[in-house]
Image 1 (tube, each protein chain N blue to C red):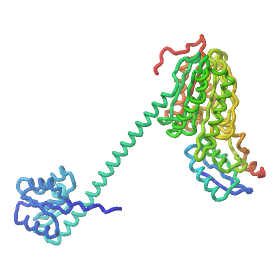
Image 2: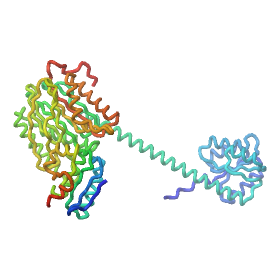
Image 3: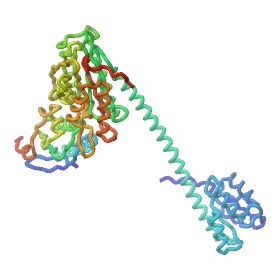
Amino acid sequence: MSVEPVDPGSRRVVVADDDAFGRAIIGALLRNLGYEVIEAGNGDEAWACLERSGAGILVTDWMMPDCDGPELCRRVRERAGHYVYVIMLTSHSHRSAVVEGLEAGADDFLRKPPDPEELRVRLKTGERIVGLERQLSLRNQHLHETNARLCQAYERIESDLAAAARSQESLLPRRGPVSGIVVDWMFEPSSHVGGDVFDIVPLGNGTLLFFHIDVVGHGVRAALHSFAVHGLLSATLGRRAAEGGPLPAEAWWRHALSALAEINERFSTAEGESSYFTMLLGLIDGASGRGSLIQAGHPSPVLLHAGTRQVEFLGEGGLPVGLIPGATWEPLPFVLEPGDRLALYSDGIVEAERPGDGLFADERLARHFADTAERPLAEVVAGLGACLRAWREGAAPEDDLSMLVLERPSSGRPAIQECNPS
Amino acid sequence: MIHAEEQGGRLVVRIDHQRFDAAFVPSFRAEMDRLIAAGHERFVLDLAPVDFMDSSGLGALVAVLKQLGDPARLPVCGARGPVAKLIRLTRLDKVLRLHDDVAGALAVPG
């Protein structure tokens, strides 16, 4: 630890005595000991000297006109901006005077006339205490400044993250009808930003591309990867459509699967700490409700059959993207009849945990969709969010929670609810 | 949290931890790195005490598998409940050498 510089205030002494002779003697003794001495003829003057000079030690006579020793002492304790070590000179040393002096805030007493050796050691004590006090206040000030800098840095990080969260949300699709399909979603990252991302993109000719991705981990690292993956998929899978019009589903899948194989090789053979993601990627024709999807390690999507209120989990799994080199996937066909719903979601939903009661699990998710089969879509999605919060008993989510729901509207149920707050 | 013991010519690494998740991954990676650096090549990974594994845990498991170069060097046993479900869902049951228990993993020569 470094030695802090000696503070000059601890070697600067104000001597207050209305008796000029007594003052001069003490002053001379202290100067001989190497102290810087400022003499004051009364209490008010002494106070002014203390304030002006920043002296750390005060030697004051008890009896002075107007402002006496105890009064000066009280003023020092109430108003001084730094600690002043106060030695009071008394001609009487009975107990009541000691009590009054201590109560006024004196640190030490000296009999008048002071013995030079006693004066020396008592001043030494004062000097030590003033030195310690000043070191302490310097350190406090240092801590205070460090703390202020930390607060500032924290606020900057918070506002950066909030901005990142806004740009992440701006990537999410619009709620409502698109090419004959009604879309709704929920998105609750476990921190400001998350590793979940999803989108639904019209490819023209009534065909929609949709995907839901969960990048391993959560927080900023996962969010950065999810931004990258979103860009990669939109660029590779949306491009062909823009260039040459919509492809037939089979041709599109050939193109998509080879793009995916490329992404898989790039991620899974990367050096060092690699990242991977799970995904559902699909294609649906809004007019017929015919679609196909691949399941890359993502939870099996929920398909609610509106007619029977039966809930089916589509698919049996598949390798994630970017984990194992050479992975392949096979599109799985499905059909959305009028009123049917298809929900794609991250594992955070079924793995939401209630302390001592286990996971939310597929069963509760299925029941929610069956129970709300007659309700408008927005209500189903908002209701699930409320269910999950209740299941966690108000605790913050441990993992990112998100869900993308596609509905093929039917005449028997309102496709869009009357009042949409968002 | 991680218990390693020589058994039948292999090092049996038991994860004595309920959650094999992002928070646990660094200690798992560090311990496996240490054991591999100490010259061990043939393991059995016993997941029996694990109740829950997340995607980070799965990623770490595959990373160690890649480090060893051959799934046969790290047969996995004791996966149950959500852990077994995750392995099935991600089709890693086709990649990993899975066994019911340590005895089953040790019975396979190699």
